[in-house]
Image (cartoon, rainbow, N blue to C red; front, side):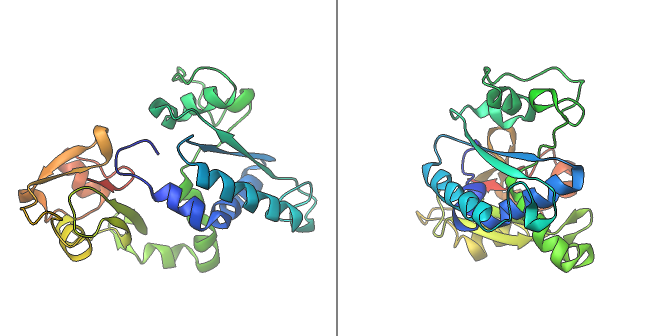
Length: 235
């Protein structure tokens, strides 16, 4: 989570670490993995402490360990603290870093799913993706698909930062407009001066002028104007 104005992963790990751990257990058992890693930025010391405690509690209660809930199947979660390099948000650079090497992007193929961490098949996913799994498993795919629009299903935690009256984290279904997010949730400009442009999705995203504020927040609509939603950071 290195993009400017993004902090949804941090707030989720600090506020509900068990949703991430449960999602990782489900994913691990589904693909036959026995080991999971959470790669943390060094800038997240509070998330580190909370996750350490949550992993210890999960292990003590039998959710993690040699026999998950008495199933006879093993799954453990390890925490890894990176040095805060932006490039380590790329999956292969992240794997290199965990292996103790410099965080440089690997040539592909082989894909991580075939040959990833320590040469083993590896599934790499975002925190928000994994933390969504328990809810979807509990309520069903149709219930999740009821949120959103078109091919952009479900919700996304949008992170409002910069010159807004009410910056913060807002989880809404895809399809809400940028204007609704900036004015109904963000309260408009914090300085009282007009909002002229916003940056969406960090330095690799795009600047959207006020003429684009009625754009619905969904992957297809953003791609159509050469922009991207990315991690949902709005500055």
